[in-house]
Length: 93
Image 1 (cartoon, rainbow, N blue to C red):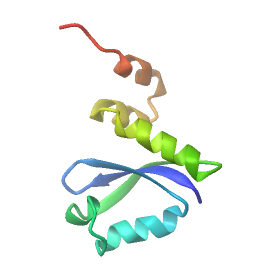
Image 2 (cartoon, helix red, strand yellow):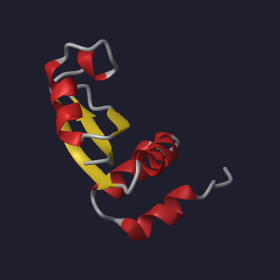
Image 3 (cartoon, rainbow, N blue to C red):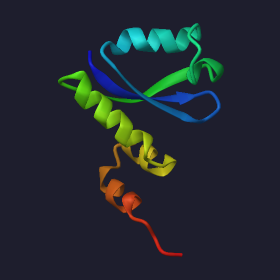
Image 4 (tube, rainbow, N blue to C red):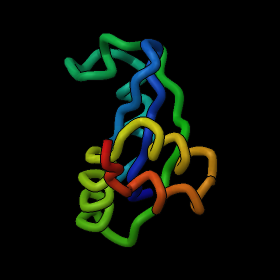
């Protein structure tokens, strides 16, 4: 399954990725055998994913989510779609 996904790492950080095979990629992350961001932050937990028609779309969404802050990512994870727009605004201080 082609997908964009988000993992919650043991240190409380989020990892965003995209893949052609979500099940296989999750096994790779969980094994910690590959030198990657998640290998030093095990265990990991899949907290969100969205299927895509092709890898290009999955990669585009990955890059978009990587630019989001923690609050906006958590709103997406929690299905609080009405909050996404407000979390995108830049507030004057």
